[in-house]
Length: 74
Image (cartoon, rainbow, N blue to C red; front, side, top):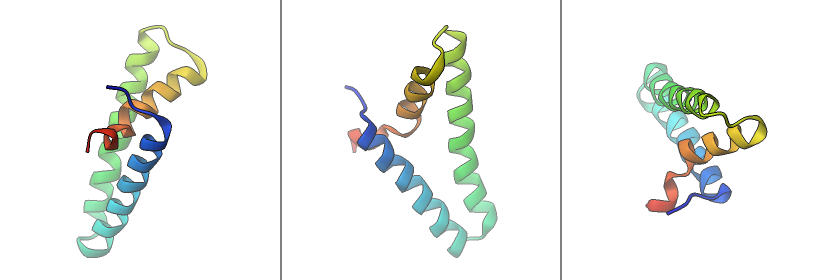
């Protein structure tokens, strides 16, 4: 099973819409929780990828696919 860029873009869009909707109905703390969780996941994954020796744009792409590529499995 692999993730692709259109699915990752869709996942990022879902996270953005969910953050805005939660911000409107629940308050800014809920919005910050969702957005901050995905930002933290992205940063942790990026550190792991960089520690494994993968550099450049390829490291960012792999991290992006890992963080937001989950709509492939919905």
